[in-house]
Image 1 (cartoon, one colour):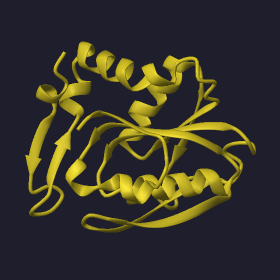
Image 2 (tube, helix red, strand yellow):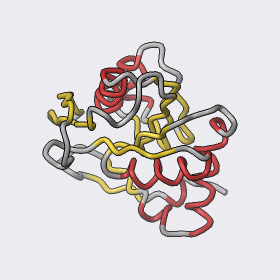
Image 3 (cartoon, rainbow, N blue to C red):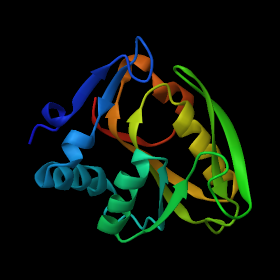
Length: 169
């Protein structure tokens, strides 16, 4: 199945000059959703991942499904002020501004094997912030998985030597 053909491209969203890859068209098709999760999960099946961390918001959809597929738990990383208990915060740069993420301080036990899942790897700022949060609470980051990698933005540089897998480039 050609997943790329099922992703809608929206020019000038969220601001002029940005080309947004809208995966709702892909996820809305049962076969597209299934193929997406199967391809994201396959490299991590049998890898003893304890927890999948999904980054708000599309990372929730993909991450929860991947967690289910590989038999892991699921932990959300959210925008500031959305988590009800004590949380750590990390500020990061986007290709079009700045933002922040938070994770509950007790979301994973020290040494827990963690996989981070999100929809897009762009400049790497969001993923690097998520990785920093996972490590700050004691998680053992096994890797990061993305549906789409925008290679021209070189996000892998911000992630140093992390194990990264992207389904589409």
